[in-house]
Length: 301
Length: 261
Image (cartoon, rainbow over all chains, first blue to last red; front, side):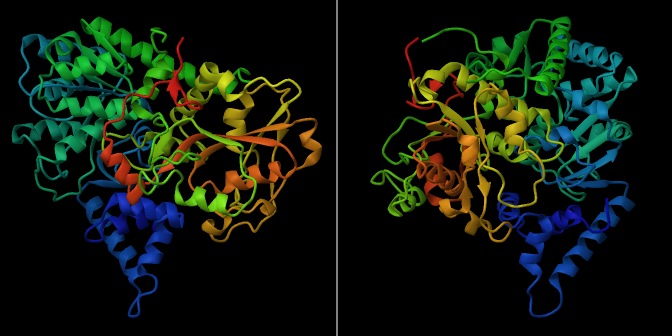
């Protein structure tokens, strides 16, 4: 991160007590950049230079995180994941351990219940393994059940495992996943919550939104009527991102049937082979769309 | 009504974008935004534009609503797409959705958007940036208008006001800020002005007025009408009408209904 960039200015803004991203984003639109918003907020104080102090505080914060092994990226920075940046509710600041990789734009989120049955566990394991063997990163949330199985399977097949957590990097939830979290952090572990953020129920749904934004698509392996993964399903739909739902989820959850009935970009799959075929198709479609944009035909008028 | 399956890009738009609701009390009859209440048929700014007496766009058509942030079940994705597609290195995802919106809307509603009128040839125009810091072709031309048939005459109005400075000043209705190069107009009697985002309408209506003063009838096509959920009028409406239905490309943005097949 550059010493004094838009990055640092946005982090300085995020450290102001009572920070609201919605309000700050509107101010950035109005003033043009985080630096201009920071100047507008602190530049005309009568005593001392609040602007310089805010920048200094942000730089100290970044240095402190880095010293603890946690990197900081802002929406204005080069290190912020490009794919996550394209969704409307991307968090302004991201904390991460490990390394970013260009292949992450193809990453597939595998999520589901904390209490899977045998077939759900098998599905998650086989899909994560198959993706890993084909060099496709696996993203999940480090929760009990499907999330943990997906990440462990990616690791055991020497794939790339990416964790998105709902706590700061200095916490692990559930506690028994602290070892898994350390292993995933060697690949990539991201959080929108700064170190020191305690465990809070309201943070986990926000984590699901980030997971949807980071991944090229979301696969829901097993989930019930009240599963938290429906939040990720809704987020994917609002992002305009594809969603893959296993047939058992489609059969058992009203919310899943409703989403499919509303004809969003959703594929229902019976098994891992169908899921993998759907993922390959979605990736191929994305590449074809990019090429079509480059060559496009005259269609209108 | 056709029962055909939506295409893949339509499926992507269904969750991320929002149809402009049918015209009703409390929605501006020009720019479609929520007004100050059901007793008002125009929003404050459109009302001010009309009060100025300048001949404005003959009609304005918005393809979608674009809330500036997610609220009450409304996605903020359209607004982000509209902001980001023109930035250097913009993601193909932003461009693909907006291109899908433009091409599919024309494919489904061309006769409503551009009714055939013998002896009334039309031209295509867009509104260049007034910030003065953008070099080269505007992304709306390179990404979107390049898809229109090349034989359709193009006009790029020239901004002759003060570049830079206060954004709100540049956004005020003022046709004198724009010069229409007559050599590009040719025989056209209608102008289709394509704008990406309608925020206040100042730019679009100024350009439209500059054309109208030359006797050229104008229709402004807007990809997204920006709505600010923090405003009392916009936010109040969105909160009172939560969870919009999925975006439906069959819904005509001109007549604000799904026409019978």
